[in-house]
Image (tube, rainbow, N blue to C red):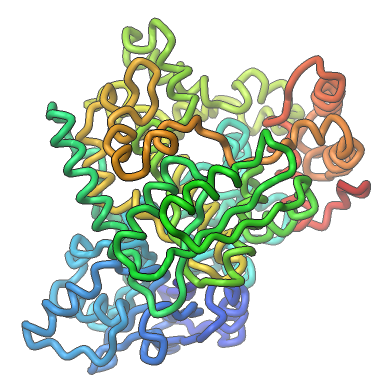
Length: 604
């Protein structure tokens, strides 16, 4: 687990080494243990790394460079099947000087070229400088567990694991005019900026399952893994269950490979309980598990986590945390580099802080809800009598509308005239959701909805959460449910086997009941969040009003009277605008850091 960074200059101009040092220092929280840089000034290329040492602590220094010095590799992440790949390489006579998974990447690339990617089981962003081709490759894992951004500026391409490193190089821009208003427009639909957009015009994601190749003649982009190639199958429950348990068990087993202490986040829900139960199968010592609770029973899962920990013989650490975490919001947004309206980032940072006192690696249950229809929104939408009978386009638009934060008409009413004119004719459904729906047209309706969330919600928000909040305190989060074998299995499974008569995760829960017990398998899902909406009505209302009305960025783009109405109607209880106000507050706080807006003068 690390942070990577670097640049490519098509005209072979060397970058000031001080800029590269600053880029690396911006990522020190991702890699406090070591640093490395491969800078070939006369070719105008550099790849760098900040390392969080997890595997082969002594010999895992990056970059790894070929014997002839012409190929260099850095990565952020872990290749979980590196042991088997290393054994294969050694059988074939390849010399490996370490037990590092990054050296395995180098040797595979030397032998097989970019096609080696299909052999990797892991979470990764990789940069490869190949002087033989005079090319730079930027590569992202299949579903975007690990981040990677790229920006074009002054004839150079800059890349990094976090936008702040690109910002340090001066490649994002310097003022509000560099903000991508289309990204803001989409943010108001999704509650996060959907990839490939970012809040900055110049910065884009390297998309999941994609590589980019920079050469003197230009840039080539190619998708190397595509979830949409799966086809649904009809099978017996027993067959689904057996394959599911075998894959998840092995995915968990290989994610226990580390030379540092590890543990797991445990809420007592079906996903985290299943992962912890499988972890306990593969180790002799008790699994270290971590949970935070709250004094308010509506948001406290600690009793369920303690029950699961007892069942699986864990060494469990739990703390009752402060419920009002709004004072953490600026720090959260610093690590996110973009506005996110999801309040659960704050408690995720808090439980990450707890775990970081004891371990450097945690396993999580992330991905289970998107793969197997675990959210209430799926049950609510597909309870509609027309959900399965609408024409394709109507179904897609209706599902998009059901998950949208602001409706298109509400966004237009919110915008000041100049912003409305700049965004006229831009429809978030057509620009963002429709292309993914088109790729998933052959899936049934439930799987189409899940596919959209796999491509947008996961890499745009839900995987950002464990990565940035874990990396903020220098711990690595691993996600067994997002093993590529599990993702492909899930999309071979028809939607009706996942969402059956309103029962979410239908066959998944049946499959894990013998492992974790009926009570944990069928416990009602409880969202990991805090009651921001209540605070916005009461103790934090003055802070919220000051934050929204004091933001120069919001005042520039949004109608003050509409902001006032949202605040007044929410405070009075006339309407519940919790999600909308959260998103606007996150945007204001982000702009405050980016541009020095004076917001939030009252205490949260």
